Length: 196
View 1 (cartoon, helix red, strand yellow):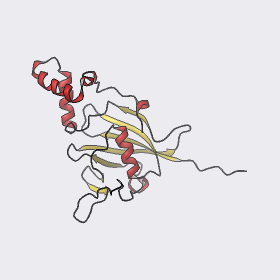
View 2 (cartoon, one colour; view 1 turned 60 degrees about the vertical axis):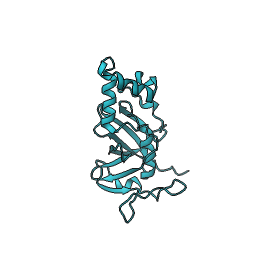
View 3 (cartoon, one colour; view 1 turned 135 degrees about the horizontal axis):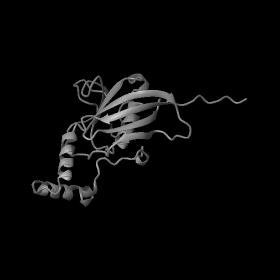
View 4 (tube, helix red, strand yellow; view 1 turned 180 degrees about the vertical axis):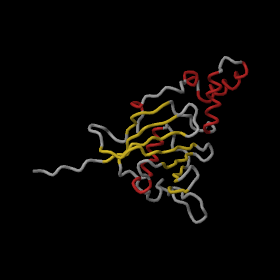
């Protein structure tokens, strides 16, 4: 009789963009053998970031104890080599346990701070392609808009588009983001459309 393969284990992670209004979050399933570099790419895609800026994972709090990418002897983040590769990343199992949080900061100018809370470690659900998004709320924020406060300002302009005080700001937004910004719905979200 053939031996059965051991069941693949997955983490269920609740990742929220801290201080966002409305609250932007995703519930993801990722393979337990993923490392922090893998998770970086998953978060980038789940929150529709463009891989344009540096990032850092922290323990304890955003801007707490840096765990990846490592820092050099001067305390600066080790940047990728000429091939775009970072040093080897620690596996999730070494830095995140069920019931604990990690923090991910992307773009040190806009400071997009994410809390990664490990909800469960479980057997991979059958017929599930991983990684995947199984739940979430609200549209992703815009890259390079000034962080959560810049994003909140954009939403304020859009919700007051008939107010003459916002006419010039709305024209600037339309010029930068094109007229598609006028159809933007910050509350729209469908986990099936998230491509990880």
